[in-house]
Image (cartoon, rainbow, N blue to C red; front, side, top):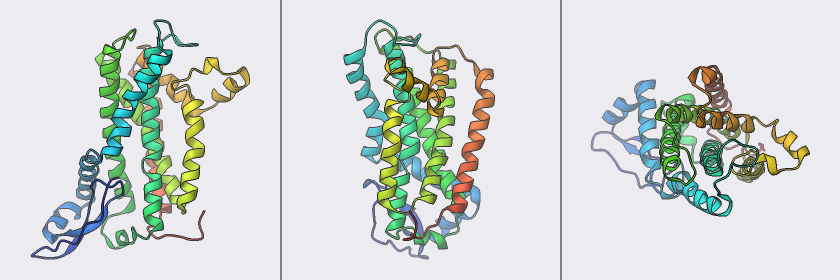
Length: 302
């Protein structure tokens, strides 16, 4: 979430609070809002959810750093890795050309990284600095807050997947164009996996209280996630003992299924049950995290 601290702006009618996000890379902080607008936006759970969704979605694109890491960085990585490793042959251990392998892998790693790491550290940092206490007195439930955030990120990740895969599968050398139906199924499948990862991210913020612990945990997860998940480095080039370890990873299974959809082998009926179970698990994780999460900093936590 992107935000900056703003000077209070008082309404002529009544001073209440809302959130505003802008460009400095911090989650939204409270500013003043009129009672009329407050009533329209958060008088019901649906109104609160819609307002949070719109705010998060719009302000994400006003934050250039976040937009760069989601939309521009995968493009840069594609050209760098494609120049170094790209050829007209298949990726080791795969039926896809290396460019197809790279397109699907970069789409997966971007969605995983954005879903898992794009929220946790910022929220832990704001809570540690006591900047979230005001939310205790606002008429918005924690589950609604997290659900609005999740909905905005899911839409952003779906747009990224549609654009990145749809464009590069058609313009990259030795890549096969993905049919519109497969592209849509691929994107839905990816954001379904992203949903459960967002739930894991929010659960991390509910358990981890200290900024240093959150940063260390993210780095501990991120490095093996990138290099040992068959995203853009083929597992076939790893030693046999390490390959057996990688095959046990749920991220590896997720990426392999997404590549099968990319290649056109799977149809909706093959993955529908899987997506329903994963989406339900993601919503359950968000609900669990909202119960455990506290707006107050806890110095006794990890």
